Length: 532
Image (cartoon, rainbow, N blue to C red):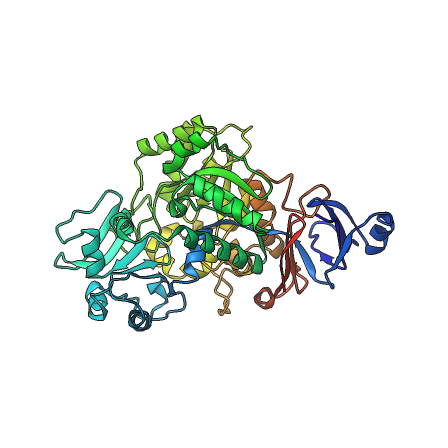
């Protein structure tokens, strides 16, 4: 790797004034920071190439601390309902896909969200059947915890009206007890088993396309969980090794789904092992579902559905067994918990099976959307990082207020309170559930509203400053990965990860300017992974 002098940049330095505009990188490491003139003088006897940033703003490399690379890559070719604004529009999109799909082939779609529809109505099984019974149709809600299928999909999955609901899952039914096409949580497992698995080359291509898309959006790295899609730790390691050897400049930090602990032991994988491009992280598990489908586990019933508190994906005993197995192998855990009931249950487990303060990586609390203040106090004493997804505020308000009711409003999506808890906090998208673009996440953290809205934001007391929001996606991600000494800020001795933006970013700027910003260049370990 030839040394590079990056010059003529506006370096993002929110905590101190800086006259530096240039950075010298050697072997992927920041070796010098200063003005162009002084660095050229220092480097007079060295051979290097020069890259001119042309006055652009240079951020520490942005990191998505929670997403799913493989699924994002597959989504790029799937029927995507993100922009659908009604049930009728969904059905029109499906009709167009049916017309070009061979009979017998699966029709897959994702990211429908009935809260964007005027009447909040979704297609039912009969409406899907009216469109086609020659294709199995299987559609995934934006939360990835609720699904829709036609009768052919149910037939192939072996599900009938007499099939009982599984543990931690349910089949939707109408008032007469007939299947209505809805599928919740673990009830989706029989459908996944009968769907054709993507060919290995298709999975590798999906990973490549996802990484390229991330680089285009200014991301230098992703914390991702791809084991369930790729099917084995060996395949995951091989795909990323091959992509790196083929010239991809993108970093990954892999969360390892708990079902693969035996294979991880066989391969000798350890928390934090790997290299500067790909590293192994915590063991991933699910404590509950999602608030949109009312499967997030609450301490008290849903305000708009008092018959349910949601679903626990595991009993407390099962959670202790999973966490205990991870601990025996020296792993922290990364747990998905959205409801206050799930957060409290996981806190009980982590207090019973604490992670050593000397551990290389912290445990990770993924989502943290509805958490009682008493639970936050207990968590603040744990070796724990909190993975926040600011875009959830833009997607879930105002309908989430009706879900949980007024008694829980004060601790909904409380990003500011989490920063004040003293626990390290990172920022992510949960793509493909939300858009991968980190600037949209930063905008949501600052405004707490959708980009097209003009109000003061939902729960405006929880707004972050631009600096706080950027640090979620830079230093916050580094802390969650145990890499704060190596990445997350522009400092001597750290890896040269930079996101270069076409305009100056400052706390007093109009946050809507972020929506106009363009990525000029993405640099990872001193290598240019993307340039405009």
